[in-house]
Length: 293
Image (cartoon, rainbow, N blue to C red):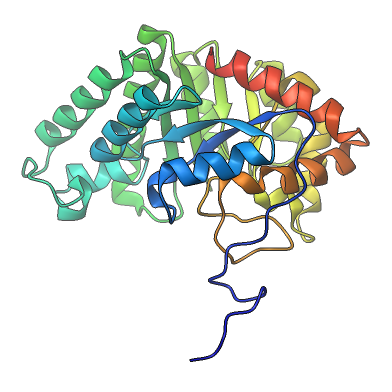
């Protein structure tokens, strides 16, 4: 069997140099990463990532997020049905309930799932409702209205529980903003893994929304995303991994984890012409303000 090298795509990237000013990973999925949560949190803390927002994408994942946040002070939970999850549940796809016993589909199934998310959103360790929003990349036209209904109900839930709203927006910029304005966005609204341009960033800034930047902001071809970062007020900038996805350059394609946040922070600081300590201090304050912890 060939010996793995540091460049092997299955090999986790090395630990980066620690940040001097601690920050938070505003969006991660520890349940999808290798190793135990304890190991992942310890690695993150060793490089100055001292808090994470663990995000649920379905009912079981949201339960897991809430349970983990109850166990660890440095973990904060977000709960929701992912935009692609709502159509799967409504249309009766067995994958939509993560293999557990579930309703047969239709409005009753969606209502039941949203009721469970609503109950979880009331818990004190749950700081956000999300990730919710719209995703037109994987869900076909038959799922659009179901996604919009689910999005609207998550918005209402976030406002009623006074929790942040975490938005997943893929190939749906105009519709996401339209729904937010129609429904009235919660006071604390976060665009996870921001993927819009500089003009959209300015629109978000006008409404006081937070923009969270992930590994793609480090990719060489993504100058428009760096332009969007530069157009975002410093007090509205967050950072995330979305791990195990979206690993930053130069480790793209290898497993991502919260301990790689310093790589993205340093790239962002270079884009903004700031010292990494100044950017880290702003990110730490912004994340605590956005999620109310």
